[in-house]
Image 1 (spheres, rainbow, N blue to C red):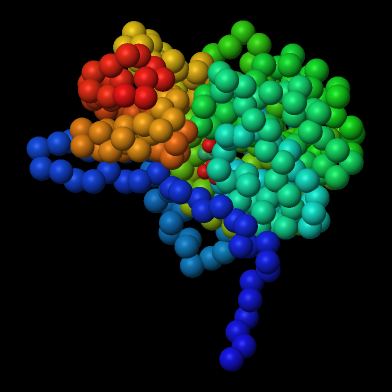
Image 2: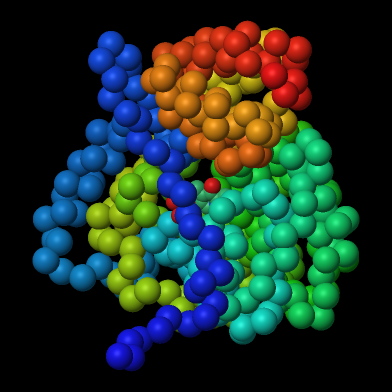
Length: 367
Ligand SMILES: *Cc1c(COP(=O)(O)O)cnc(C)c1O
């Protein structure tokens, strides 16, 4: 009997492993620190805008997301034609790969980095060219520039890097771009940019305005707390944004999601105060972990990375028993999101206990 077969490229797609929800255990408060979500509930003004928009759910949304793109364009100081939106910036990345990559084309990206990259690249039939991070979890921009060949169509930069944490600095990215040929599209994924505290922070939108081959990708999932509503966007040169829009899912971004973003932009001061509090918590957690002896790469997002190697699964299991779900990357390390203060306190306690039980002789101790 014959049956339909998917394209051969699909056999090579790595699985996306979503952050696990916490397991309920009697007597233990459970916290999900596995998906880099914002722990704050929606502001009432945003909820009200969502409720009002829900009243028109029998209608399709504005397919061009006009009001939303106008607002984003005005904030970025670009024309509306330089904006493309999607159901999360992950969708925008997929549409960009669809728009620019033929089978066999190469896409250069750091590794380990965002797990959606190799999935989107492989699904498109393109070839992923992973360039190892430095030992402190940073992009190796020199090696990435050297990995660009005449088959390279796209370079993906992730800053701050998910899952390790460090951010790229503006001057370093400028120097990198000077080494990349103009026909190669450089996409700068700035999903966590609001959490960066650096004296030379990367500004992808600025670079996208200055260069013909650069786009910035941003999202409302993290700092703005709208992960469940799925809105992300791209700012870039008009021909690139148009190509991405051409590949976009029709009516992807719902009326509810568009309304939530517009309402969120109206209460940005309150949202950024929450980001400030999360940054303070991040710094507190990092200092506490380092005091315990952990080597934590400079965290510039809303998460920290512990390089646990072969102990990764042990740590995730240990954390789970204490009520904290982390995101393990087997035999590599764990990514832990910054949550509410109580969750962060539990994390600090269990991380210290884990060292006492499993890492008697300091980091790297195989036990
Ligand atoms: C979370 C995240 C995104 C955006 O996710 P969406 O929810 O699809 O907007 C993009 N890039 C990285 C590196 C992320 O961690």
